[in-house]
Image 1 (cartoon, rainbow, N blue to C red):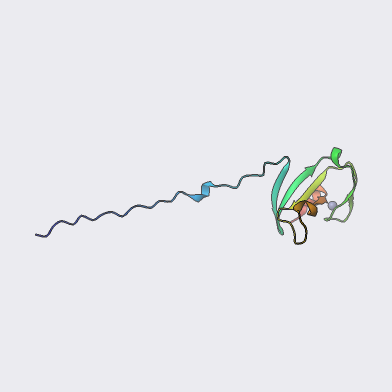
Image 2 (cartoon, rainbow, N blue to C red):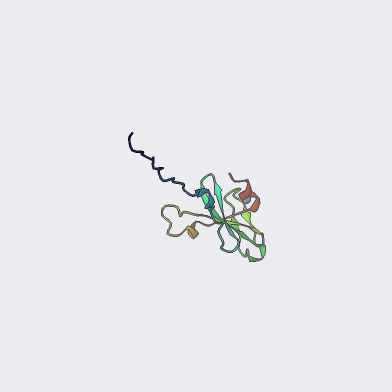
Amino acid sequence: MGPDHPRKPGPVTRRPSKHLQAPRPLSSAHAKAELKADGRWIVQSMPGARASKSYRCPGCQAMIPPGTAHIVAWPDTPSLGSQRAVDDRRHWHTACWEHRA
Ligand SMILES: [Zn+2]
């Protein structure tokens, strides 16, 4: 009779699930990232007490008067031509920002 050839079981490769790595929220003060139709934006709320200037809202083209709490948003990735994303900061009415796609 022939010799017995026991089959070696191949190594079982089990990879740990990568779904455990959830993206961490931005921890900088009051700033959060939001995904809009045109990309990722960093959003910061500006309390009325700190709004000392008037800004033109790009959503409705109306002015945001000083002392009005509003939203400051800038792209997570700087647009072409600007050195820093902060240069692309925009001031929005809170409602206009929330209605944005
Ligand atoms: Zn507006």
